Structures are given as C-alpha cells and as structure tokens.
Amino acid sequence: MIHVSAFRRVIYTSRAVGDDERADHQAILSASRRNNGMDGISGLLWIGDGEYRQLLEGPADSVRETLSRIMRDPRHADIRILDDRMTDGLEFGEWAMAGLPGDQPAEAAERLRLLLRNADPTIRQFFPVD
Image (cartoon, rainbow, N blue to C red; front, side, top):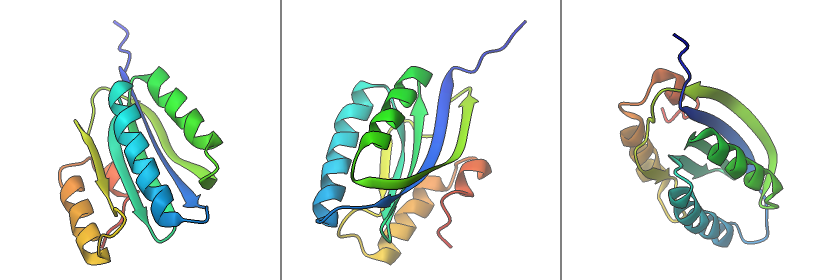
C-alpha cells in the first residue's frame, strides 16, 4: 500500500522591508488571520529584528498559493526556504503568532517558547529563542 502525506509544511525566512515597519506588521498579521483560515492553513509567524520567520502548513495547493503570494509581496525581501516537506498531520491547529508589534522582546520570546513547547524538534530548530 502506498502512503501519501496529506499536508505540506514550509518554513521560510525573509527580511522585512518598507517605510513603516509597524504598519506593515499589522497589515501582514491581519491578512494572515483572514486568508489563512479561509485557505485551511495554520502555522506560526514570528516577527523580530527586521525578520519574518514563518511556518505554513495545510493542504499542499493552499500552501503553494500562499507562498507564491508572499513571494510577490513587496514587504518581503531575501526570502529563503528553510524547510519544505509533506507531513501526515498539523503541528499547529490554530494560527499562532509571536513577536507581535509592541511585544517586549522577553515577552515575545516566552510566547514563542510556549507555542513551540510540544512541537517537533525539526520545527524548533528553525525558531531558536534561547
């Protein structure tokens, strides 16, 4: 019997660019919440030190389309795919975010630690907080 994984998981990093970083972050977070839920995508978005680090997971077509949209977004530069694989399940049942605009660095790092506490080690390696 052939086993086919049902979900795709992509982790990428990009450099935040734009004139108003705080407004860009808020707009990205708002669009992510709206679009990703409709597309069946969950994951984790970390914003900090002028960088976005994101894990997208869900149906392969939805992840591909979302990643394509991100690559065309002028608020992202130097996009690098860190990990791209098919999986049997989702690590994040809901959309999770850390490093939100206005967060104190220590508070954001603690939130990220909590979000990742039960995540697979292959995911945690891409989101170092210690």
